[in-house]
Length: 306
Image 1 (cartoon, one colour):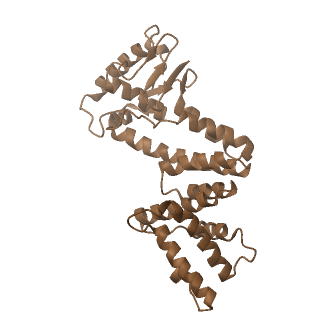
Image 2 (tube, one colour):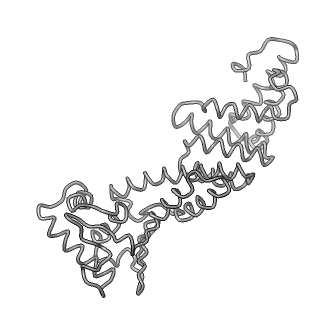
Image 3 (cartoon, helix red, strand yellow):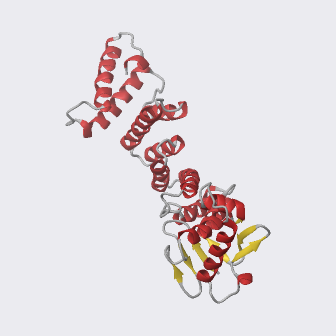
């Protein structure tokens, strides 16, 4: 078996040696292997289009065949072209899936195996996949368009996998694991609101009410700054439930104001020394004004004042 690594730095491990990014005979030779590992099978025209980024030379077929010949010798000089893991197919090339292992393929397989399983069974498979993807896909190919596109697509899959894993971890009561997994998703995609909700839920379930409220504030601030929108109703409802969690009469305005006031005071502790009042300090001041209104019996609109 030959192991091809696409996560992080490009590497190939054979029975006899390890090839690093400079051992393939040239940049184009390495890119051919990476493209075949991404797509498994490519026609020569498709491979040339990607390899030369939409502008292949007129005699690209001969050049491409020479690159493949060099690549085969670098991977395994002891076998003939016919027996190479880089196989010739009608009009193109493919990797021999019976003799090649690719970390990206393993990632995809683990996600497929986890799909539809109960939380306790799916979680370990998703964590194995996420461990494989601990570094960005094709990290050394920063300036190559097809690699950047593949990296972006795959990053989205990692976000989905991390979010699903966090949901499973929360379902089995492992709140710390859930928070760590959801945090990986929001680190990769700060706009992944489902992952933010899981972080908020995990922190609250772990007894970290202040952390949960701070997480909501971070989510709200990110969505506001990046998209100019407020969190989705499900996220706002989660926030209100956390505020009301310790109140016996959920829904009563006085109790809700008391819960908001307590939460704002908790969140404001770390921001008291700021030169410019933070949104948390402003929330505290507004909520205290609302609390005085409610306490005096004056009418108050919660949405408009707090």
